[in-house]
Length: 184
Image: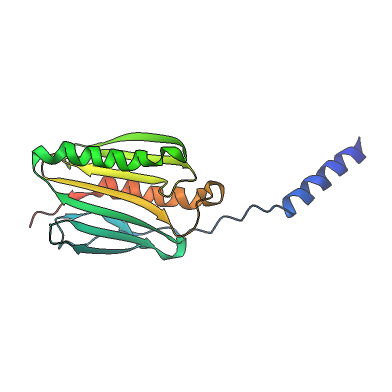
């Protein structure tokens, strides 16, 4: 019995030392501060990410939230809208998410509501070998529509990216919770 227990422990130790699964990255604790107030919106971003934005001639604002240490980025677009355009933008955001159905093994949708900030939206979590494992949209349904997608700069292996994905997902949730219009 003792010999069998020693063999079992030895086998477990040998298996754990020869694992080919990559070790998860040591992820730093983020500090948060608001993005620039020169845009029509703002939100709290992690100090582990770098925020950039540029405005197009059509009044759209393209934003990037780059995570250099994590080899990832969130691409986002702000659209100033009229109330009657809301449905068009909502359908387009839905269409973009569901383009992944050929490779996604699951798509989880969470409704988002922050009545104090008059911000509502959807958070999509896509499983499988998808290019964008997290996408979300935010709106007040009358004056703006904001969409964002998370991308990694390498092929998405969901097992090895899980801790990084959870880390960025917390940032995205913070982004959604603190998103507000700038009243200039």
